[in-house]
Length: 289
Image (tube, rainbow, N blue to C red):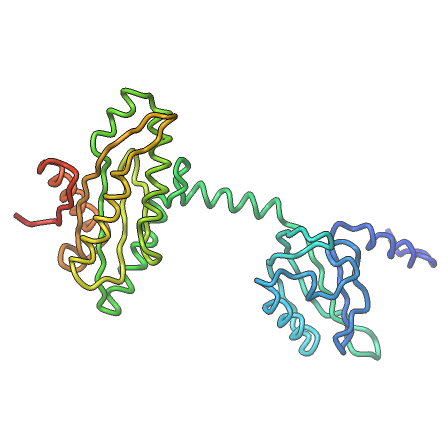
């Protein structure tokens, strides 16, 4: 069936574009906007519709589209006329015209809801739901990448395996909700105790792991472990009750104690239990003996 639009349909097409939730920007070969639909663009130049984080990348893509007729697709942050930020999916493509240079068209769709769902799924996959710390999966990924770099550049790595001493008593005396609250507070203290290149992960229960990078001597590890222990040894305020507990820490080093993440984690875990046998509230390095 012939679906051609009858004469006078320009106004209909204009209305369809004007009321579309997607944005459309058309640029002439000189870079001058010919049309910018109200949705997203609001009649503004493209530069004003792009978050500064992505502005240079998208502007460069638009330039290649206009000068070289190079199409592109991209995901970026856009800024609406009212200042709100959205995730957007954009597609740039040339519009050939008979007898004159092609125009450049840039269509943009709001994909914020989809992006937020993707980010939520990522958080569920890679972060501990209770504390917000990286989980085992993300820690394994970071550890693997750190080991690759350590082998390539002959760097050292260290793994600290932490267990909160007698934490079970907290759950037994005050309930699991109180225990969860303390774990959240302990995770926050751990995060503030480590350095920028290091990673802390919740392994499960009251066990945490810290991956240390960029150090020279064992004394550097001892200092970091002491800082962590001091932070966790400070009283926790739990609904007006002062709760105290200590932590036992085991350490394993790359390459001295192993060359893969599983071996190093196991040996750090063994060292942590050795610290508990020695009376708890201590740091122990892995030893073959």
